[in-house]
Image (cartoon, rainbow, N blue to C red; front, side, top):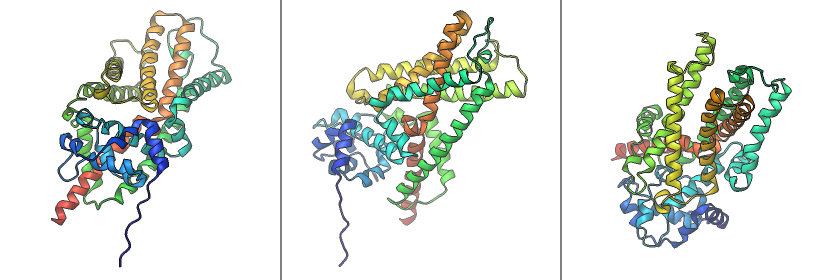
Length: 373
């Protein structure tokens, strides 16, 4: 006689999920309204009814390994129509935050960001103090009498010596966490097909935010997310072009406002500002449409807002304000950007890692299912 699989509920998981805004899972009575109204759920793998049951039971391993947790874009159509106000969108949001922390490498950094309600002063202050100490220790704390470019205060080589190693660390941490997640997903269903062949169309979906456009209640979030994504892409491309301009093209710095690289950077800044404002306004609006805010979400949004504000203010200060004020703003900007970089694998930026992997996995599972039929 074959043995029955063991079901091991975790009360610790339920308590932690409740702390992260998912206590309403207990109200669910499995009517399946949520799965019926979700525009993103497929007939073969509807959600979030099943995931709500797993969360209720405290079946941590099963719900963490369920790709539907990441296929959910928190449209909140389910939350609006739930007759029990169980708020499935908020519950799955909490599960995602817990998954980011569980998969984090190293776990201590994941826990630090996951508990941003109490650790946010540390997450912000340490990078800023690091830059102040680095500038003082390398003899770059004296302000120039005639200021026209930030390189006079913070040489490019100093910036590269910090951000290149940090970028390498982020890639390593993301690779380890991504491998863990991919392995975890692989234990749920057989997959078939090429990873790269399925990744390309997934990246196309993400770049156009195709699934966000399918949302009903939360569709206003589409514009904010879309603009913010391409604002960061534009900023990253601009940074790469500036390195080319400085060391290969030997362009004089700072660039004129009419230079193409400068135009791209400023357009990217506009996208970031407009996208950030839209997301903040949405977050402060209707709780059903926006979903509940947790410290994990609020810290990330506040950090993005600080990067945008200090970045724009640095440019304005360089052109119009005192050297002392420009220095203070620029060092703050460098510290905030460093905090954003370091926390990429542990914050909501990690969605850019786990969601595409879940989407690729789902495509490969569907390919395997069609092969067996």
